[in-house]
Length: 448
Image 1 (tube, rainbow, N blue to C red):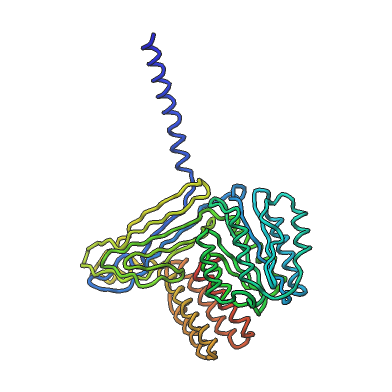
Image 2: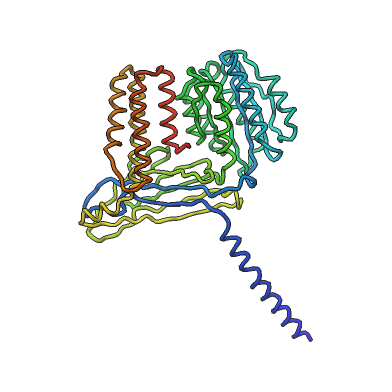
C-alpha cells in the first residue's frame, strides 16, 4: 500500500513539472526586455591601420501597454515671479491643471511655486481628489517677487524624495521664464543640485518660457539629471509642451540604466559623442536615468583600435548593461562582446561599413561644432558662427548613404543646419540662441 502511495506521489509530481515547466518558460520568454545592440561603424578595418572607429551601444525600450504604466511620483516646480504676469501665469496654471487631470489615483503629485522663496502649495499626495488639487493651484499660483530657482528645485526634490521608489517614475518638471536672481544662482550650484537628484533616480525636465530665461542653466539641470528640455517661445504652447512631456513620463519602461564599456588593453577610448560619461583608462561608464517605450537612446564612443593583420579578428570591447525592468520589477543584465575584423582589401572594409552608426557619429560631431558656434555668438563673432553652421551643413550635405535610415537622418540634420545658418541674421538673438541650444540638446540626448 505504501509503495503504491509513493508511486502516485511521484506520478503527480512528474505531471506537475510537465504541466508547469512550459508555463514558467513561457512567462520568462514573454517578459519584455530592452533591446541592446553593440555595433561598430567599421566592423572590418584595414589591416595594419589605426583609423578611428565608432562604437554605438543602442538601447531601445520595449512596447508598453498604456494601461500597465508605472505609477508616477511627480513634482511640478513653477515660477511665479513678477515676470510671469499676465498670460504666462494663466497658461502655467492651465498646464499644472492639465498635469492633475492626466494623473490618476496610483500617482503622487506635489506642486512647488517659487518667487523670493519656494512654497510647497501641494505636499506630496495621491491624486485622489482632483477638484481640491486644482483649487489649490488656482488659489496659490499668482505672480510676485523674484526668482528663487534653486530653492524651488530643492523643495521639489524634497517632495519627490518623500515617496521615492525605484519602481515608480520619479520626475520633476521645472518651469521658468527668467533668470535665477535670489539664493544660489550659478550654473555650477544648480548643476550640483541636478546631480544630487540624478543619484536619487529623479530626472528633472526643464521648460524655458519666453526669451529671458537662462538656457545654459536650464539645459545643464536637465542634462545632469537626464531629463528633457524644451524651449517654449509662446505661453500658448505650454500645454503642448506638458502633453509631450507626459507622453514620455507615462512610457518609461526601464530605470537606473548603467552601461559599462571595457575596451581591450590596446584599444584607446578617445571621447564620448553626445552623452556625458566617465572614461578612466580602458573603462567607460555612462548612466541613463530611464528608457522610454519604443524609443532608442544610445552611447557613442570614439575609439582607436589596435592594429591587426589580414583576416585577423580581435576583441575590441566587452559591454555590460544593467537596468531595472519596470515590467518585471527585476534587474536585467545584458553582456555583449564587440569583435573587430581586419582585411587588406579596401573594398571589403568599405562594404562592411554600418552606415547608420557612421551617420550618427557625424550628426553628433555636428552638435559639438554647434557648441563652438554658440561660443562665437557669445563672443560677438556672428559671421564666424555662421561659417561654422554653413560648414556643418556642407559636410553633412556631401555625405551619401545607401541605407535609407542613414540617408534620412543625415538629410534631416542637413536641413536643420541650413535653417540655422539662414536664421542667424534674421531672428532675434535671444530666441535664436535658445533654439540652437534646444536643438543641440535634443541631438545629444536623442530627445524626441
